[in-house]
Image 1 (cartoon, rainbow, N blue to C red):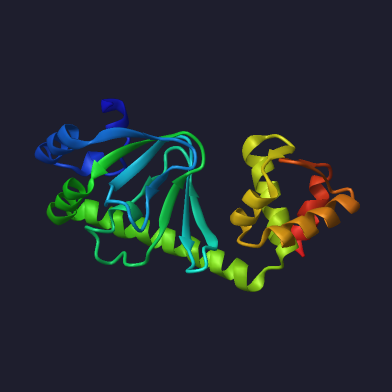
Image 2: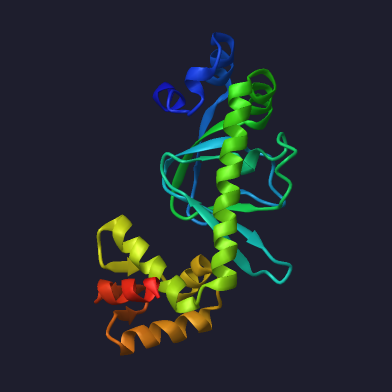
Length: 220
């Protein structure tokens, strides 16, 4: 537990009293795959750091359509779930565990006290919020200006680079959520990629056959 607490980005900037406050109140919480960490009807979790697993941040339209904003892998930090103590974070977002996930939580009340008493923690909060805003703007740019085949090809290449494997275990519905499109559109483009022998598409598995071909689509 203490080893994880010491990995907080602002830990070395805390006073002894503030460190004692965090040690006494921080805790580790587990979320199963598909479980909501934070959303419209959930309580204000606080600031958290991903210890294992991965979290997806998204917004939800009134019609129920999800738009993926960003992912939080191991070692990443999130303050969107502490929006109740940061009035500048006013947009409604949802956070969901994409796989079994453990997070180190600094409760909202404690994180709020740190922001009030320590200017370096407050600066960390604003810098992280700015980073997330930049990511969200990039996602909006992709939705508005990038062709769907380019978005899908880019996603597949990124997955391959992260995992080191050409087999991507993902359903068409899950892929549609990741690239912010409809499943029917994703199915049509994957069929086109398969016809061009760029990928082999089976139920729940997409195998990349020609990475260079997908890269050329990304570069168009």
